[in-house]
Image 1: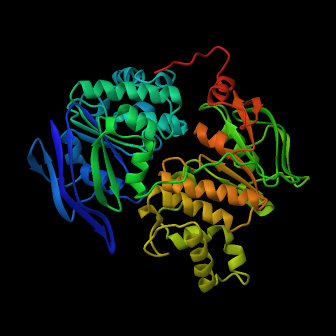
Image 2: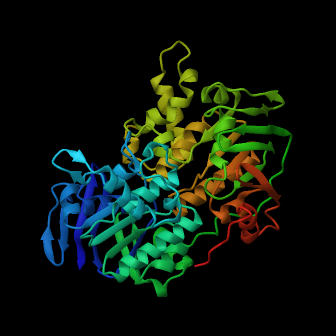
Image 3: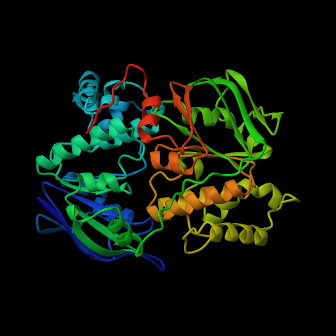
Length: 500
């Protein structure tokens, strides 16, 4: 079984997303696809999936030319693409999401719910976290990690020939990622052709047989994974060597800005912490430890059950996130598409939405000033877009993330809460965000950072707080802490760590 991508090109207006790209996906092999955000990876996946039509070139399945009229044609032929952002059908169960469009029937009209839930339970057992997931439970209530798990498992259907995975571990815990790796290896041994898209080089070098690299819409090269290391991959992706990115720097902390005392709420059980001006404090922990839940409580996006929050020594009791923003505290959420962006609006309107009040003193938006301010922010954050009128949904993940950051920086916050700020973005965009965090801290901003990337936690922080079970389990100095020590503090007492 093989899939050939032959001389594919695609443009959106003046932007050339793909330029004469040719790839060969082979059955029983993992081909990794890497490149910076905006390199053309997502466009290529959408062409493979039938969501886009190429301007030139085409696809061939087992050397026979194919042209998908829609994604349904691709799925029927055995090609499935798992997108980075989980697509959950609202108002339905987990089982219905797993078998959407293929629900088992009892007669022409009735769904066989017993069989559906039984089949779903067996499929969920592929992941250890899935074993604890109720197939009949509401899919809307799933965490980002379990939504990602459902999206992956949904692709496993009889007749699967080609599986493309786009940043599949971006929301998964280490244990869930290990389950995914085992699944990928099993599918490879069964003859499935696998395209694995990831910015995580250690995963790529561990799983892939070959690595293909895109840069600015063109194929730079395809190499055996055994011949590559991190430095060579980075040089192929960005066209130059990088300077190492993070630096273990001490920021000069000033007066206390944020204080949290015995805060309780959904998923949080009595957390206390403080962050000083010019300080970066990281929250580390496993999926479900309560990090995002804590951020939402501080920000006013979830109801408090007890405890207090103070900003510059004054009580902060936001009835809604808007109150926190007006007080000088902002939150950049983990799920940028669901919670941080308006995909159908332009770069301009996404960038200005947080400061519209200051741009409209007489309740009429000063459009020229709006363009000037957002343009300056986009240039500062190096947001790559054809114009400020470009729809945000058409931007790459890294540029979307930089735009979300730019929007909140326009408010000049005293406290900035960053929840997985580099999730699913490339090494170049990561370095820009690392530099921005350092710059903001040097300017006196108090930063609370949530990250599942251990090098980020240890490399960017002045202090590390490890959460476990909704509580602070340990406080560590990143200058002396190790990844193993942080993981040990994050693990429940009765848990064991499984090695690969």
